[in-house]
Amino acid sequence: MALSLSGFDLSEVLEASHSVPAESVQRSPLADRVGRTLAGLAETARKVGFRVKRISSLLRSQEFNDSLPNSSPYSHHVSGYAVDFIPEGEDAGLVWERIQPHVKELEIDELGAYDGHVHLSFDPRARGKVFDRRSLIGKGATEAARAGIAKPRTTGALLLLLFVLIGLSRANRVIG
Image (cartoon, rainbow, N blue to C red; front, side):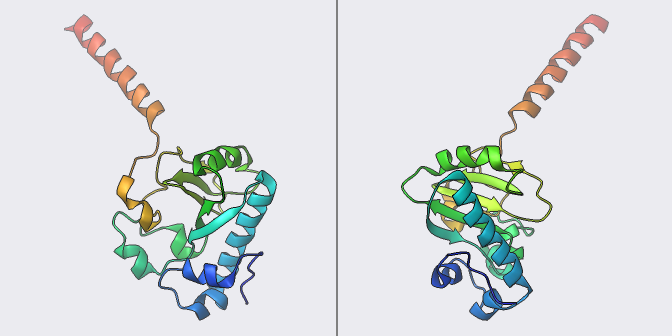
């Protein structure tokens, strides 16, 4: 099936498809997934009200993805479901905040923002994973963002662990 661009420029799409031959992007089983991802990005932009300045990462070959430091071997970019983009005239974190309430409605699987980029995945599982805007998405973010790797927010889990440890230390003092 031929690739549906959803209003995006073919040359930009091909440039953001790292180390993937043009014919594979335009005509292959991946073309359907990439088309779905571009349609998801276009619908998200329409619904939330932002413009895309540039698509920074779309489809990656497994070899290219594996060459990136800290990349996930299961990156949604390899399967054609993920897109990273730079919003036009707006902070990526602010666009992230505006998209967040629409994650389920727009069937977004992953949403995150980092280093001026917004990451969206339209994997059909549509799990609605939202990552803190200061974090990277998993380990498979755009190579340009590698300099400032941060961890996803874990504040709640750390607080729970802290309370458990405090409770155990108090119990040991009472018993001991």
